Image (cartoon, rainbow, N blue to C red; front, side):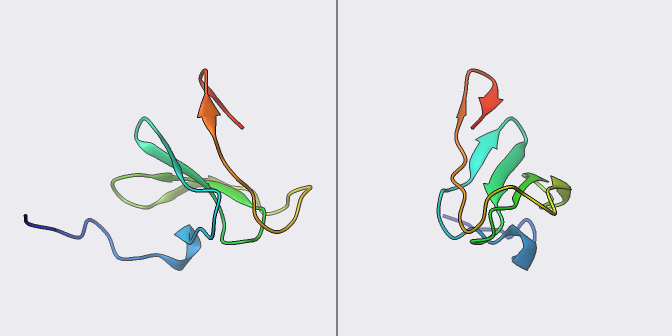
Length: 70
């Protein structure tokens, strides 16, 4: 098995719990125990959008079903 890093670990992609959901070519997750969701490109790690302010706090769990994020 050969492993090749696609991109370096990025602190802004940290995720404590709730997991990371892959939908197509994009990752959806919570920003490490902050309750601030983000979307990043799978192959580059580039943040496509993030929420700088959310109604909740602490961790957020992300799930996907029927074409929607929950």
